[in-house]
Length: 158
Image (cartoon, rainbow, N blue to C red; front, side, top):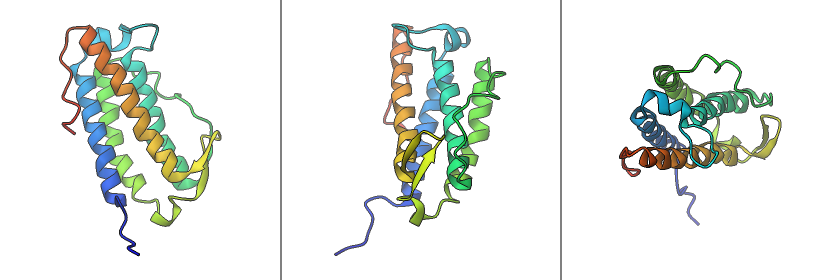
């Protein structure tokens, strides 16, 4: 029986960072005003969705690395009210994600951890949630951009 994994830890990180690069391009595609004001069918504006992604990735990985199950919070993101501020925080967080992710031993990926005190799953499932949540919200951003008559980046260009 082979012990070769389907995907390595490094490949998973590369996959996630590829999604982050694409989401960054979606943020860039928004006009300033619409990033924080435009929505469809009562969904939150994409700027708010981007702030949620910022509130999950680094804080979630910090929680996993330090086994701190503090509550989910968007505190500290109140000052992010411009596209420039979103992109600046996005760019500051991107290397932190790699740094924190690389501190998680592969042997811990199947250890259960209660992320934010409410998501009691194996660590790998919490990390996959980070990625899935980003893809989900980026899809909303694509709908918004198309509704605004703006061609979004190709989803496969990660």
